[in-house]
Image (tube, rainbow, N blue to C red):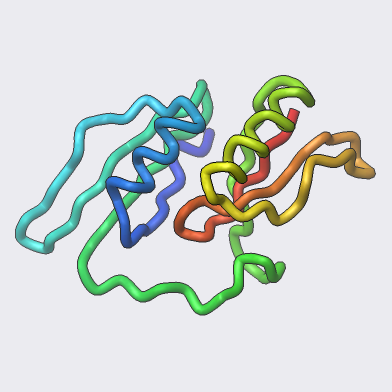
Length: 129
């Protein structure tokens, strides 16, 4: 058993797809559309783990949860980038591109070196070694 994919609703499908392709080297599959219900999605493969499905339909509601507040439910996607230098580099690159940095790169009590940024939709992304 394994996690096959994680799905994320977005109001800006093309922007979010390009964000993950550019900054996380995602391999983007073909766009799927169901014109009857106005559904569109992309599957993205990032490394060898589960795929990320980005989905869009008209009429989506923006979450009222502040991404800076820790709450019940899925809280972040975590990406291992291989080294502390890569954590620092990608965090700085994303901040330069306008992403909000929630936690600057730091060592955690359980042995990780990580940062946390928000993607264009406000989803929390943990970047770690």
